[in-house]
Amino acid sequence: MSRTQIAEYARPESLNEAWGFVAAAGPSMRLVAGGSDLTIASPPEVTRLVDLSGALSNEIRVTADGEINIGAMATLSAIAEHRTIASHASGVVAAMMTDVGSPLLRNTATIGGHLARGKLSDIIPVFIALDAEATTYTGELHTMTLAEYYDDAVNKQPHILTNIRLPPLPHATAAFLRLSRTAFDFPIINACCRVDFDGDLVTDARIVLGATPLRSQRASAAEAVVTAADLTPDGIAAAAEAARAEITTKGGWTASAEYRTHLVAVLVERCLRQIAGDGGAA
Ligand SMILES: Cc1cc2nc3c(=O)[nH]c(=O)nc-3n(C[C@H](O)[C@H](O)[C@H](O)COP(=O)(O)OP(=O)(O)OC[C@H]3O[C@@H](n4cnc5c(N)ncnc54)[C@H](O)[C@@H]3O)c2cc1C
Image (cartoon, rainbow, N blue to C red; front, top):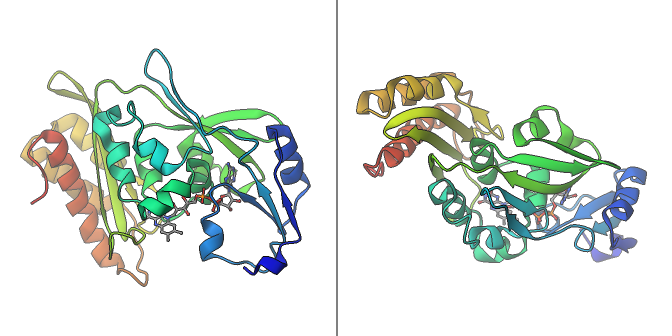
């Protein structure tokens, strides 16, 4: 994108004012949060930028019962460094964030921009595994699960993402693993597993694969295996095999479909072994 192609730069001071720009806009308008997408894609039709920094919050608030509310303008670094998020679901969000791009990227990229962008993401599978909710503004506020935000294509409609909520998960342990060509690169594939315990008993599970290259896929059969068989070595192996069988993969320029399918089982098994407490790095 050349600087000269931008004819208008607006910085609305309220959500409603920002929505006025979105509702009236066509393909020439682009919302800007951290602005990192503009560094890699330069669509010639974009001539108007609407900066969201004056209209949206970057605050991270924790309620008394442990619910975490993240303003859409919160940077990935602020999320990674937040004290409560550091221990939420055994620290999986903070650990995953250190795999997203570089510190420079994380200092500018926002959670709202990342989720609205909605592709090749390390964050989305983790947030879906943690039952995250998204609040959008389209003249009025709507709250839905993050999975619904994508399944119902809300992310493709004119909207402003205002807030992300992570519900309290006091009995959850989670793990995230990814594979990429370099530490700075987008993922070839990733996986997040979350297991809820009552004492030693497994009460619930989430297994979500990302960048398959689809944005996210839940491995429901594998989740059922974990819930029925607990985290025994045989149960973990069976869950990894179930995930391998049910997750759809495609080939691309970084990996073949067969390689990604192989990695589904590897990553799920290693995540579940980490949760079971035997490291899972072998
Ligand atoms: C070099 C590089 C490496 C990367 N590596 C990784 C990686 O390893 N793993 C990974 O997961 N991601 C990676 N990313 C993706 C990166 O995390 C996202 O591009 C970034 O988070 C987007 O955030 P942003 O705030 O800069 O959004 P912007 O670029 O400002 O916006 C992104 C899109 O979302 C829209 N938008 C922004 N905010 C809102 C809102 N509140 N409501 C509605 N729409 C909105 C914009 O109109 C735009 O279309 C990488 C990106 C780059 C550039």
